[in-house]
Amino acid sequence: MSVPMIAGLYPYTRGGITHPPRFTLREIPASLRVNPGYLEDLLILAGDRLAAEQLSSFGLQVHRVFDDAPAEIQRDTAHKMKHWMCLWALREFGEFLWVDWDTVLLRHPDEDFWSYCRTAGTPKFLRIPNYWATVNCGVYYASQAWLPDMERSFGADMAEPNDELLWMSVLPKDVDERGEFWWGDRVAQIWNRDDFESVTKQTYFAHVKHLDWADDLRTIHRSKEA
Image (tube, rainbow, N blue to C red):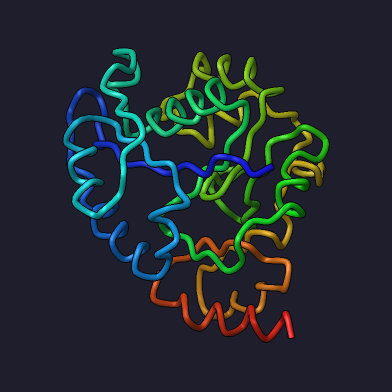
């Protein structure tokens, strides 16, 4: 059985000061051009009514608006809204796959993919060498077993508690060494063209610096499948 694949848009509020998500607003139509299936495949979430209108303008159907989020979340949407949306999805569906807009779908998730998601009951994250945070949440999965931990993570004492740092507050200290928490080559991180070769026949998503690499990445992926 497949898992809800979710994505969203929200304003960037820090310390009560709100800025429009200009970069993401440019990224979404570019993502939909290279991933037209996202129009149907993704369950779309909006941080407020304006974000819902903006998402609708791209032809996306908004499933839920989070203008009822607690004041703590509203004051710091830049760091906490994505995590709050994912917590809602976990409570609502029992599991979810979050997909950032700066991704390229190379292979549609199948039963093998969903089976791996559920392996060991652990969340699945993208691991990026030398990344500023231990886990990357560009494409990530979580299941019901981690609901209490995810709820507890909102209480973590951090200067800038974004979703990646909130997750780290509840993950095992040795998560680096625990293969059951990582995607392996199922999700590839593509910072530059040298990273293209990290795409294998098992890769489902590429988390990319530039969406216009999509055609080249799909060509490489097809060559690995041959």
